[in-house]
Length: 189
Image (cartoon, rainbow, N blue to C red; front, side, top):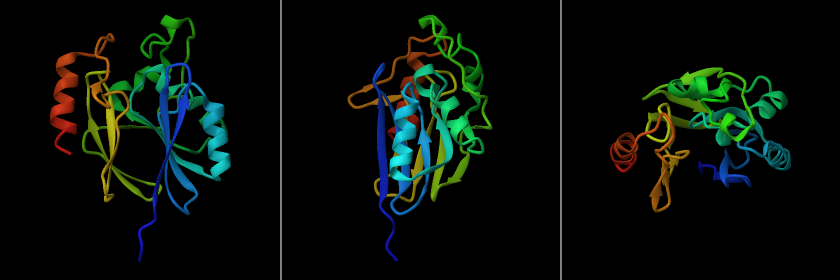
């Protein structure tokens, strides 16, 4: 039996060029929404266009540009669980912690339906994902590693970029932590 094709559709929010990802298997109607950003209408349109229903909303961390779409998605799909690393869960409902207050926005998200920790295994939308805690950009940053795929897919938020790493100068970020996270949790993959 042939394995369904993996589809990853980026939805880019213009303000910070943040990437939200719709992650699903071809022919399936359930998907994962990862880091819904500042343009939730664009995300909702992409879901409608592809006839997808979110099985879960995954936040890699709690900064405003990665959680701004949570409320609109939860309104459209109220039973869809919202997951985030336990160390960043407080950022969802606190505009100072999620850094939006500094921009005069005061953005908040619904609270997490579930928090995740290092080593948690999630079975969602036909995928098996392992959680890795990757602090440095934020204290509770996590990545979601999809196993059983060639190549392995990693949804890493702001910890690692093409040719660079994420910022570590936020109030709860440190260069030492992000360096360790990248070297010990990601490069070994």
